[in-house]
Length: 149
Image (spheres, rainbow, N blue to C red):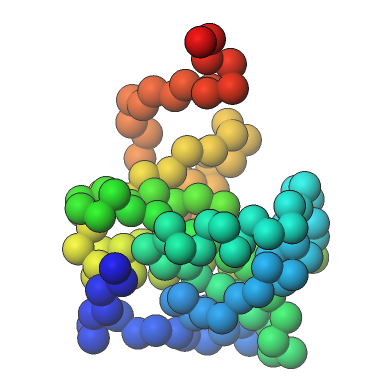
């Protein structure tokens, strides 16, 4: 269940981009954004994932086009997990991703979470550590498809 906090605004505008917590979003828009980000989109992904989210942040340009996104899932207690940070390829390196992450962190905190986790490929360390303020921690990971029976 989503908990709102009056101390955290539901949206803000910066450099002509509107950032919105739990902003409206269609699966088709996500497919377009993932492809523009450089990923491999899967039709139906957003419709399957949305019910499991604490919330998400959308970033839209002045024409209303989706140019950024980040999803926050939670264990329902102290921990939230940042996943699927994406910025349209034509809009990268303009601070949009950093603002997406900061806004998502504010809302996770307002929802009562104490910790925000993220994992990422090594080349994204400067973004998450330097730009977004995450700190390195020990963690473990199992690639489940590789797990034997």
